Length: 203
Image (cartoon, rainbow, N blue to C red; front, side, top):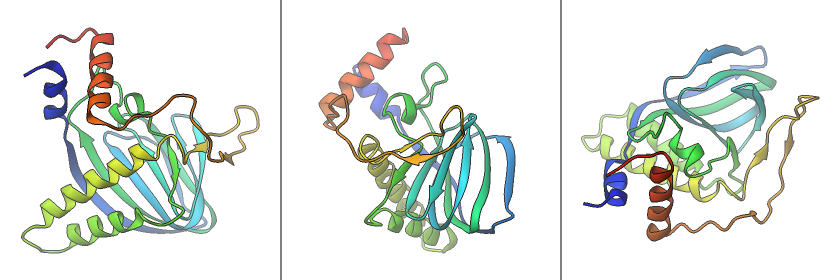
């Protein structure tokens, strides 16, 4: 088995936990170390997520990716902040880098303007709280589809991080990326090979 096949064979996303949170405008989550990755979907309201010192304003129908090993603090800015939150780990890490951020260029905040991905969060939550004999397979399948969606949308539906001087946040309009993203397996293998070789890892 070659190095690219080994990479993708080893790659797994392990589901840990999911919940649905409803917070009022006084809610504050103090800065903490996050030992797993998280995906959050904002159902209603607005707030600020501070990831490794960078502020991101989040609002309804947005997905937020919070990488493993970051420092996170949050607070509500409107009358409420309601969101799904999924915790998971990734089996592949290279030189302690986050795979989705450094390899797939995942942005911290993505727009779900058509609400197509909200269903994935809802299904993961429903199966996790249910008693179906097949629930683990449904959870794993929906998590993979959810991650596939955020990877595909990473370069076209992002939100700019906070301004370094004012702390203000603003939406980043859709734009053509400076680089061309090829989602094919062949291109993914080439990216995997390049990343592995650049970190001095041999097969």
